Figure 1 (tube, rainbow, N blue to C red):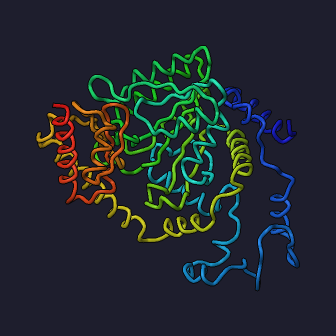
Figure 2 (cartoon, rainbow, N blue to C red):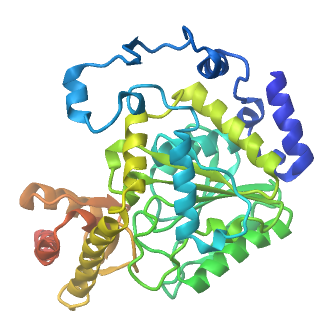
Figure 3 (cartoon, helix red, strand yellow):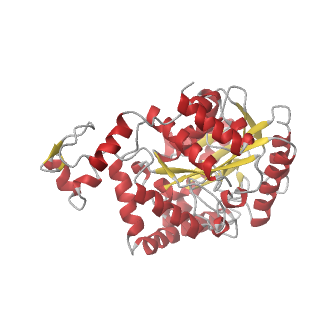
Length: 434
């Protein structure tokens, strides 16, 4: 094992042996090279005031070399802010700005100890880092039965972890906190669990109430008190799109400093929050009462980044930073939020009209981009295919009964027509059976 990896491991084990016990085999071996091209280039950047012949970019007239056909479309930005490599951890100013934003939007973080966000190539990359650092073959990754399918690829296929499901909703159509608690406590023999909390939920668009949020935190704490080391990951992809009286913060704040056996990890980003899906700018942030643990986890995270993508895209980080610094940023976000909320409210009013009750019921939703229908008489995949072929309507079939509808991409005035056509599709299939 590399000496730097050993030093990081010794630091983590000394400061919090529970966090050390959470690391995967890869997580224990990974490190960020202190002596190598990047470190030597960084030193040269600071000291080489005559010639800096260290790093693999081309310069011309003191600026990064570039093509005019590209720069003409990006003329608002200095070449140094778009063409050079971004640091593996992301632009320092962007990391600071995102941390400030986190504190403003999550009052529960006030006074808590957590690290500086590390930039990722959007949220999937952040989750992949979590998987690499903490998931080994057979480790339990706990997610609800209604989930984003990429968790299976990221944690199950790539890392060999065991995916453990619990029902998202209980019999009262509330968040199933008891199911989560039972799933965590079932890992007592393993002594470790990775819990992924995705709110607003994809695919249902559900975010827990404040009371349910407290129940979730209590379920995770119960696992820790039972001797289980819990990596508690908040997948906050759709953060901020809370349309009703749900929790309006990430549970990351409530989990920080809760118990030495709990490692809170926040994965979020500009992707959906700022409507820049193709920019691929995300962040991963750790919570710990030990600054040494935070520093060591950051170094291991940088090691994963260096070994996979080297660093994230510089232009999109610059664009996001520019937006965060703009005086118009908040007003423009509120304008888009109002549009999204209007679409969600329209979906509810259409579905609550009673016109479609014989065809489906819908799962509770109050946030995010999506909602799910629970079909009563037809198979979801049959309906999905029929809607596509006959009506030119795209939806997502999940299992036998569930049909996901992304209201985020449907104009409000077209929502009623959308559901009338989905209903007609159900009737078509029912008549074909008769």
